[in-house]
Length: 231
Length: 231
Image (cartoon, rainbow over all chains, first blue to last red; front, side):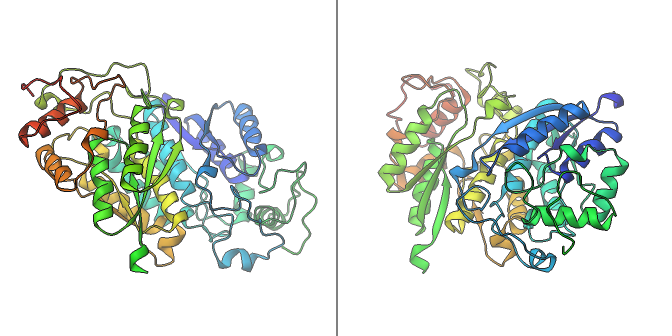
């Protein structure tokens, strides 16, 4: 049954998670794209996620879990999103866009879903190189989560396996953009901006990091024309 | 500020979690009772949870997260709840009332909430002695979750601490009932039955375990008159 092996892919609709979806397909998995409508500032990324999953031929699953019930972040509360920060500022500290335990919640739901659909892998676009501020995107975090999985669910304690794969974790943004090109990810469908306006703002951390990646890879981002060359 | 230390208590409205709430208070914490409306078979336990929190003077927080979006359990799907099972059957295997990764999801949300309200402890009524079927109530599971917490959130990677406490984990149901009596837990407000009828059914695993505890402690459960002495 090797041909029918399944993977759950955490698909936010951004660049990194979209690459993971295409990587899962390249790796031979039947992909289940899992997207969260969590009360983020805009649902544009949910729509992007749906379109990318469709384009890739993945099964699309949207989960509603309103993290505004908990709050504590610029992405779910009325807290300002930082704009125009330079790379060294982005790297320096945990930004207000940090959502308390968000990836831990998302991975938990992904784990539950993976057990129900009998997937053996969870793909996640975590990256610790160019955006090291978040605690829940590091290799040490993923390792701890894997060890939790190994004792947490019916499937694993019965001898089965669910493995988290984070193919981008040690890549630079340049390498990530190159990987997207190699995998023919529909970049024009991906959405990285923290705001949900018609066009990407070009100034939030997510836009700045994306622009850095495209610039260093020597490519033009057809989606965004606002970022200058001062990233 | 030792007097203002806070704890999040996972409060389902059942016996075990209610004891945890009273234990947290005995231990000197300002208690935040966290209850999940997760699409379980009935919301009676949510109402019980609210009343117990009120009685105990705890802050009550209800989180809605519909696990029927994922399914895979007799508690969230149209799968039959086993009735009239003997203790050795209950102990033998993971029952269909197992909800995939439920406690992992609940702990993740509790972790997020604990970080937002700046609590240093999470109380959870996990117990591995009389109901060993569930994977996510064991000491090894809690230890793995604790190790995840230590690297997962802003607070912990900045040197802070959030500790999971499971005071009942190695108690028998008899000891649990005795602890409830010692702590003056309002037993008549607690709800253990998996079904949500006017009175507890007396036959589901949760009712059977509760009856066993009361019987062995030599006490009468004012809530339930249906369980026989054949537990």
